[in-house]
Image (cartoon, rainbow, N blue to C red; front, top):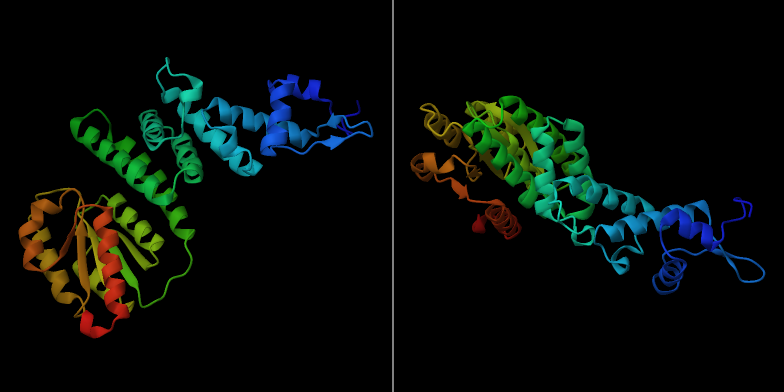
Length: 320
């Protein structure tokens, strides 16, 4: 058969590893492909049909049911298969291929292994493909946040070097930036300024806050790490921010940070809410209570406070 006219099902079966019976079932029951027909009603498959069947076969071997993936476009299928096959080496050798799923835990394990190998390209690819199979909140809260916590813990334990943390931070910063660009423009009167104060050099918590806020419809002004109180306050004034969010991660015993926090609160416009979270916030709880900051224990807290601020703003100044 001339390939330009199509391939018979026996050729397709050989190239895809599927039986002719399975190919027919996937076509008839799930609409996986739509082959051409000869005048005598024989099926003829194109190169595109064969590629699609190969992708579907790989997806089902990774544990996805054909009913879940049969209608996905090829671009989505390629991304799904790439994630599954990238995380497969992180699985126990005894795991059955059909038990594999692109779960947050498996993706998290794969990202950590990429960091251990100092493989920035692999880490970036895993996170990129994970955006296809995981929702944005799940990706952030069940993959990125735990990954950075684990890296931080292992850095303090001495089992990972500072180079590992810097590599992960650079890749995650890019990934979160890409996520933020995927959100549409937000009203300028719902602006959140995000930063870390002077001496707080770990910015991943701030980036996660910025991305989460953007996904919740806020216009975010992200200033980066280790900013003096005067600069953060000036940005809040200039952009007429509704709130300022700070991330406190390390160190937990900075003798100058309390003064910076008090200075920031005094410099902010009246009515601007100060939100503070991060691993080290509890070490500064006394001063945070003194300046009336709202403490964020997790991203659920962040979303709750942002939603309340939007509601209060919608109901007018009397609710602020």
